[in-house]
Amino acid sequence: MIYRRDRYLRGSDHISFLREGWPAGRFTEPNEDFAHQHQDVRVVDGVQYGDLPEFCDFDYITRVARVNGATLWSLAQAPGTPKGVTVVTTNLTNDTTLRWQRGAEPDLAGYEVVWRETTAPEWQKVLPVGDVTEVTIDLSKDNVFFGVRAVDRTGHRSPVAFPKPGS
Image (cartoon, rainbow, N blue to C red; front, top):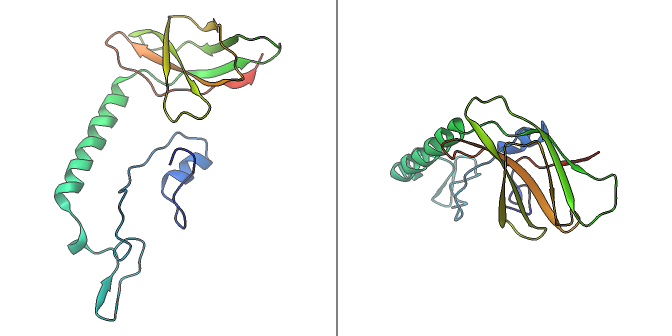
């Protein structure tokens, strides 16, 4: 799902969030049973189709709910996602300057800059930069994707904010 908005022939609840500019994620079953998912309830040639309770694995659903709850708890403990993150694009250099607004959380310890190659699905490098609102890194903004996240005193990390071009 990293390189696509959703799976073919269907759209999930997260798309409406993304359309409004809100961060969103979703959990999905990688091995769908198309007789019982994305189908109207009906019987064809003796085969039952549709999303019906008898085809649900409630133990699995319970485990997924626990993972979702733990993830939400962890995010709720973390500082807010940095706001106003920009990458300076007013000059041609082989380094990168990032700027952002300082969060107001009383337990804010500082920030981390993360980056990954443009073809990598996950962050590959993390650089703790401290309680600052600007940093210059000896790495070209043209070669990687950058992000900034906040960290509190107990190590909780915010979601990453992607920078917008700015001055």
